[in-house]
Image (cartoon, rainbow, N blue to C red):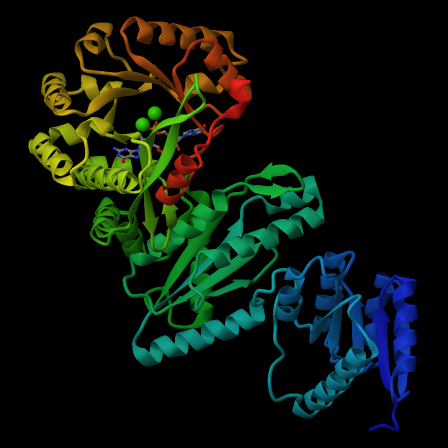
Length: 574
Ligand code: C2E
Ligand code: CA
Ligand code: CA
């Protein structure tokens, strides 16, 4: 073996890298090495394919996209020489990607010495010899170089395995296929590099929302597929489908641009939608086409029966019920700030659903359903109980006694036990009931007015206060507001949004502040996001603010930290 020189190709446009290799090779104990240098990436493919090398070193420290494309091209043209990528310390995440894409090894430029080079070259030649012996025995590994995901070929292989397994165990599996609706436009408007970047981001998001055991593959330019093995409940698939579509609708950031892409997802379930990989793929594709033609429908099952089941309210209701039973809800807290001191003076409890498949689900996604199905009642009790427990926990930590606001839905008043149960929860928690505030919208106080008012007065006598939420968006008569035990008005964030640009909004907000003060109420501005808005509110004597400018809603532990550190909006105090 030593009598034949080892042929090394270096693809790198940097002449100093070439000089370094020459120097290192001269230092090697055996001098049976021939170094070839290719300084031009466009010539590199020809060079890799026409000559036979024992090992190829490919630079990926500058244009890593170009290098990965070259890697993929070289491999897909059947080049059998082991490829070692030369990366920068700056981009360690590249390592996993290029290895997954089929590179044999990765070296960090700058850390290469003669010893290391010799070891790599020796390993590569051995690897090469083994490969040649095994040729024809095993199929090549097929990964997409851009995303590191299995490509179509490997994907079909895995799908076939999954189908045989399901067949053997009388189990089931699902194939989810989807593509982007406007990928061509992204390429045209932002260039191909941006397109590649988008594909990479999508691959990452997709992998983030399936189990490690599920296969995610890139099966075409803008086509991806997911295999979900061993599904327990077929309807659980709706959650996976929802999770996949949820991550796709979040905007992508491409070179400073916010890009929103839409996608269509088709699902085929074995064995109903087909007994062979080809049939499943064809039917998932058909379902995908159907999803594309249906306005506002992001995913579609091939079988209509499953469509009906998965999308039915019954199913979504069962899911919500299960969430409640399994304690999947969490309370986040958003601080409320006093504008004259910049200090935190209270917080609003905002519910979140930590769904096992969909991830963190926001209240706007499930409160309406909870209201429709009556589940808002038990969920509402949970919220009050948890808020009381958190108040108690803060007291035990010795924090200053802050008020906590809890949102109430008008539906909760329709529960005839509401007053009784809520009183029970508050008193058994052992907190001072005055620390609780309930937020109600105008619609809530106007619906079923008499009953609601009685309830508010009774609760108020026990200690809790009330505020009028989303003020300005509904209709409530002045007479009503005046008669009710309401301590504060929360100006809806739609008025705050443009308060510094839109003089009409500015006028309305000023009028609301005056109205509240004339009724002896406190004014809280919702959704303050900028210093200018804060300035406007402060100079117009708004009492309190709640908004992203200071903090979004955060988990309880983080809220405690904010209070402990006595965080203030300092800019305002100057
Ligand atoms: P809301 O009562 O008006 O709550 C304020 C919403 O505004 C929260 O959204 C909060 O995260 C968001 N927000 C706060 N500051 C800013 C800002 O500066 N900019 C922007 N863009 N948004 C801001 P979230 O948590 O998604 O809650 C949405 C709605 O869900 C709430 O609106 C409330 O009506 C309802 N909700 C939340 N928790 C509960 C609950 O426990 N029970 C009931 N019945 N409804 C709840
Ligand atoms: Ca609220
Ligand atoms: Ca609000």
